[in-house]
Amino acid sequence: MAFGDSLTEGESLGQLFTTLNHDSSTPGIATSYPYKLQTMLANTYTGQTIQVFNAGFGGEKVVGSQAKDRLTLELNARQPQVLLLMHGVNNVNASSDPIVTIVEGIEELIELAHARDVHVILGNLPPQILTAKATGGSRIAAFNSQLPAVAAEEGASFVDIHSNIDTATMLMPDGLHLNEAGNVKVAELFYAALKAKYHREPAP
Image (cartoon, rainbow, N blue to C red):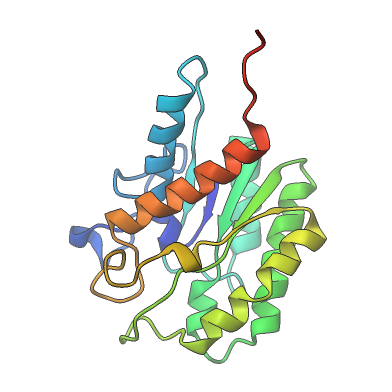
């Protein structure tokens, strides 16, 4: 199950400034990274039925929102084996929210999943190009720098999304959201992390 804000929920050019409010029992819209990941897994593991749930919610914050309650509801409803977590950009973009508090919010989400024996793969935030919507600036780097240690301390896997996103070709015009190529890259990174942890060759 993928959990986060609009970076997870997915964006398309026709929906750039709208909330999608999709059904979280599905992988979401075709341009989102959970949908891309579902396709990759289905094409690789043809003998299994693997479901990817897109539990992204545009505009949500980690701190000062109902993110913990929503994650609890989604974990109870979907009962996933793995949680793909990329969250916090709306707090990072809000300069009034201390980075340490946002990181603590991420830790709490990981702990909610681990309490249900759900493994967490934590991704950091992609880069931004400064616009009216993309105001993270140096706070993106400050937030991201703490996530590898958080993953190690909490027993989660870590995926470096930030350094794999080309701002010239993988961001939408608002400088914040990922375009389809960016979402393909995020899907590839989470796919690689899943494969590294769970892939087993069939017995001879």
